[in-house]
Image 1 (cartoon, rainbow, N blue to C red):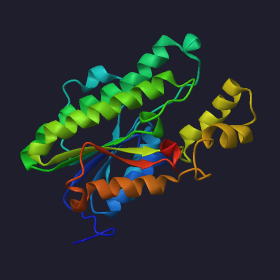
Image 2: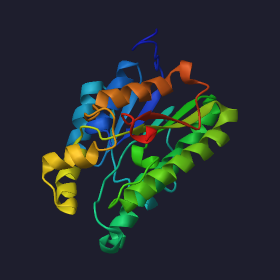
Image 3: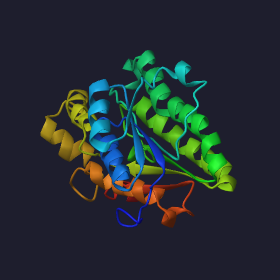
Image 4: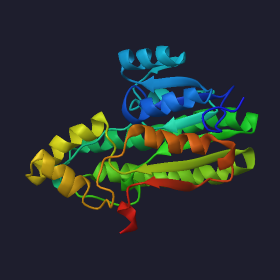
Length: 253
C-alpha cells in the first residue's frame, strides 16, 4: 500500500530520538503516517509514552548522554533518525568544559553508537535509512555556540562515513540541515541569546536568528519531517552522503 504521498514504510521499524516534542515529534508522526512502527525515544518518560500511545508505537525512555550504556546496545531498526540535542550559549572562555563534553556525547557520540547498534540489522535486511538532524550550524558557524557547532560538524562527517560503508548493503545516510525551527529548544535559545548579545528577545529573532536567512520566518517542525520522509522513500534510494538544507537561504551567502 502506498501511503503519505508515495512514502511507504509498512513493515519498517523507525527509531526517532528526542521524539517527545519539537522536530522529533513531527518526524515520529510523519513516519507513523507512512506506515512505520515508530519507537519514540526520549528521556521525557511522560512525553514519550503519550506520543507512543497516540501513534500505536513504542516508548524508549533513555538518557542518550549516558553513552556507556549504549556501548553494547543491539537495536533492530530499519530507520534511525538522530535528532536529540541540546544547546548552550557562552563565549569559549566562559564555556563550561563539562557542558561541552555533554553536548558532544549526546549529539555526536550517541548517534555513532546508535548507528553502530542498528547497522547489523540493516545490513542483514539489505535496506536501511540513517537520517541525522544536523543544522545550518553543521555548514556554518555562529559565535557563542562552540559545542553545538562542533557536534554538528562532526555529525556531518560521521554521516558521510556511514554513507560510504552502508552503500554496498542498501543503507543510506544523510543529514537534514534546518535553520531556526519553532521548537522548545529554539524558544529557550531566544532568551539565552538575548542575554549573550545584550538584546531584547524580538531583536534576537530579527537581528541574530534570522539575520542571514533570506526567508524571514522560523521553520515549522512538519517541514523538517517532510524532508525526513522523503529520505526514507524509495525515490531517495540514490541519495546518500548528502544534505537536505532547509535554511531559508542562510548558506547561500
